[in-house]
Structures are given as structure tokens and as C-alpha cells.
Length: 329
Image (cartoon, rainbow, N blue to C red; front, side, top):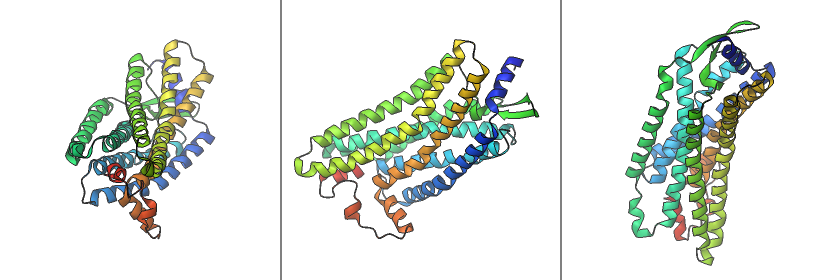
């Protein structure tokens, strides 16, 4: 790393005291709120007797979310130490690998769920056998393998460096907030986020159109409940994933254009830290989706809260309609 690159990396890695306090508290609150809900979800989905496509996809989404938030203690330590990486090379590689692996696996599993919901609503009953837990398991396995292979270079290249600062030498982990800026990074980012988001939006739009075609006595309740779940799911993706990737486009564009001032470097660095933190909201918002989409999770959560379960009032769709079983299976 030449001097100019080192100085630039120093500007990126150095957060203010107020920023470090904010992110330390933020990540700790995320851990406290997301780990119990996702652990409960995984326990509920794993102990269930059914092996429907929905159950398989929700299992894998819960695994991705738990793996995603379990790297957050390392970020807590980083910010608590004043933007210093104290854990060495191997943990730095692992935190980057698991963070990005589970970030994109979570996004793609949500997209898979939207496609499964579309098939459940759109396919005629005689074709529902095309949807099965085994096929969903194969799709999930292929996604995990693709993600692991794509992210594996992080595990085999040095990711820490020592920089000079006003308080002495500081070790930083490039897998936390130092983003690569290149045309290939721009292309991979565009593909990685556009494919699942477009899939999700198209699938849920078609579902709503299908519900609009439902006979009138069944349609009102079905539309209301399905629309609520769809809005929650889409908002989850828009809130958690779009800001980070929009900022990555801006980051890469500014760095590939040419000269960039120190003030802009600091601004981009803070935006990078903030939008990266926002991606973790998905681990909090996904359990909200589980509550509406999975009866067994809803029951377990309400039992833990000491509530009496009344399925008639909590069903995601009208239990008297055919769409009820189509949506939930």
C-alpha cells in the first residue's frame, strides 16, 4: 500500500468517538433483539414434522439470519475499541466471509420465498406436486454452494493492515468497511442486488393480481391479509438492502472518477458504516414476516408471551378459502 492509499484508508477507518459509541450501542441492540427471535424461528422450523417448500425456505432464511448477526460481536468490539481491529487476521477474514455470505443468502432466500408464494397461488391444484420440500432443499443447497464459492477468495487473501495515525499505528480489517472500487465490483453489485429485488417485486405483483381475480366473497379478506404480508416483506428488502447497495454504487462511482477530497472520503466512509449497519435490520424484520407467514412460529411466540392462541383470528388468509391453504403450504 503506497502512502496515498494508506492515508486514504486511515481516513476511512477512523470514526469519531460519537460514531463509535453509536455503532457499539446499535449493534448490541440488534443482537439482543434479533438472536432470540431467529433462534426461536429456527427451533420451530427444524422441529416441525412437515417438509413443505415454505418450511425449508424459512429454515434456511433463519440459519442465514442467525449466522449474519453472530458476527456482530466483532463489530461491537471494533467500535468499542475506537475503530481498531484487535482480533488478528483469521477473524477478520471470517467476519467478512460470513457477513457477505449471509447478507446475500438472506436476500436470495426472501426472493425464493416470493417465487414459492407465487407458485402456490398461481398453480392449479393438480400441479401443486411440482412444489415439494426436496426441490426446495436442492435450490437452497445450490444457493449456499454458490455463495460460499463466490465469497471464498476472502478467506485466502490478507485482509488486515497497519496504518499510521495521530495516536500511533492502528490495525484495520478491510472486511469491515473498506470497500473495493472497480468496474467489476460495480457489475457484481448490480447483479447481486437487482436479480433478487426484481424477482421479489414481480412475484408479489403477480400474486396481488391473482388475488384481485378471486371471486368477490373470498377476495376482500384474502387481499387485505396477503397485501399486509407483501408490504412487510418488500419494505424489509427496501429498508435493509437498498441503501447499502445504492451507497456502494455512489462509492464506486466517486472513486473511479478521479480526485476525491478528504471531506468526501470521510462522508463516504460514514455512509458506508451506516448503510452497512442498516443491512442488519433484515435479521429483525424477518421474524415479523415469520409471524404472518408461519402458524407454528406464531403459536410458539405467542405462547412464550403468555397469550392464548386463537387461530381463527390470526390466520394470514381467510381459513374458509382455497387460497388459505395455497398461501401457507
